[in-house]
Length: 168
Image (cartoon, rainbow, N blue to C red; front, side, top):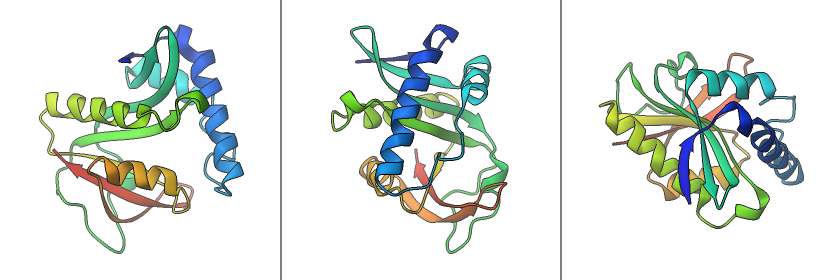
């Protein structure tokens, strides 16, 4: 397995993986990603900004995520806890999705590990991400990879998410 920057030619496969993740979440009774997001525009923007990474094996994409270093305004306020670091600049992971054929093969963990390497190279103290309160699969994946649940955040549309952070 190798991880690389995504390019525009990867868009159809990235969308296939995301659509499968949407279906999986729906089957699990999780309403995350059930409103049309993430969509083509979000994926194109991730690629244009250099945020999109893909995990590939023998020419087949197995997982995707957006990772970047910066500041996420929705992380400014956290409820029921605190972030482990108080930095204004940190690594951020969004839109992690794994193809059905790669589930339970370590694809998400490999991608999350790569995200930590990207953040370390930028000399930030931590990585942050969030997930739906009902997305227990992602919660377990994050916790297995050294992330700590820090509290809840509110997305711009008011939706509640669990905020996670991993100190590097």
